[in-house]
Image 1 (tube, rainbow, N blue to C red):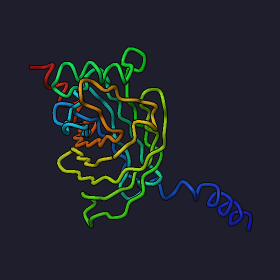
Image 2: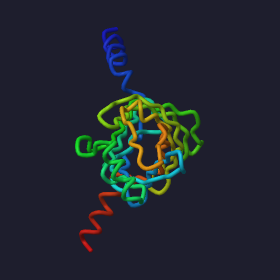
Image 3: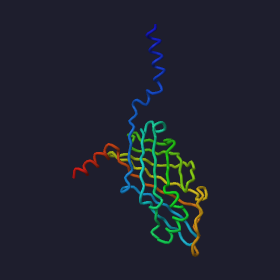
Image 4: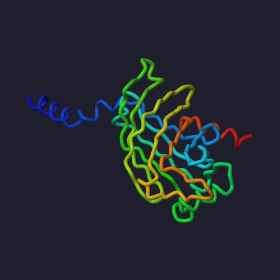
Length: 206
């Protein structure tokens, strides 16, 4: 009888951890050269877009238990953002106070799947996290499509934000007034952490 009681005590103590024992948690580090972050804005004269050239981050989790295991972050260097127009970029850096707020960051807080393929290689998620722009942090939700193949992850999504929410007031120049809304689109490619280490090791050997 004592053995049975002892077994039951151990079972209930460790039961919460049992489902995660079989999780296949994988970490993918984003590859800037293969990823793309773009932003789209409107003005009184015309629409324009730009890209972020310098960023890093990662995505981690097990797709079957993504709500419990999902982690991730993204850090964008503000100074690397460009619209390919020197004067407009100068105003943008001033509005973003690049000398004071060096980065735009996103830290994942939760991920909820609405679809997962049978082979677990594709999923549709609603991710929620803290987005910080211009020193102001807001919780945002973003729908994303995720695909994994050959040790890589592919994450695609977009989010419309209000610049006012982040205390950014676009400067008007000449006859152009930039509107408040900005659409951020991302197409992130990440390599599985152990694969990435092997690739970097091979580069050093060569």
